[in-house]
Length: 210
Image: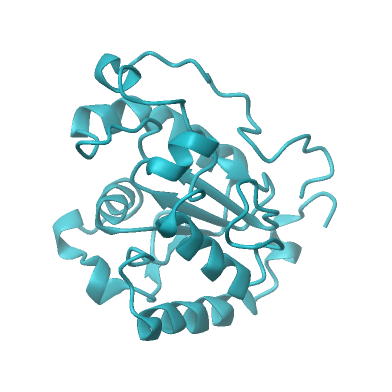
């Protein structure tokens, strides 16, 4: 982690009592902001908290989907704890969501994602990662719209899974939903990502404490 980082959980002190989306305030347990290494080269973005993250307050934890993603991070050497941990020891990785609150009956609306967009933009700006990993179709569409010149409808998370897309200021590596991905798809992502990690990002980014 960055030498000056005090906590992995919501390290930028974003509003933990946000009430910008009244319908979600009524259904969530808590607001789930980003978690991980603020000096990370790799930032993973999902759609919204699942049941587990709503309980733990940490993205991609507490349920099968979260454990599947944490398992992949472990294979990449970015998670130094068990996939089942509620507070994983992430190094050089940051995990977050488009929308920060959960409705158990539906995905977030476009308006709710737009309302949360300043949180995501602030995390990306502060971390300044080398690679953005949109996890799932919805995250890919939003990241593609914001950070590429290609229309979002041209992307497909299944076809673009484990490939590298040149974005505006970032490389984008789409990832299929880790809960639904086959072993072959998971292995393809790990192999592709490991090849990217062979580059020496530390020299170009000048991270403190690395």
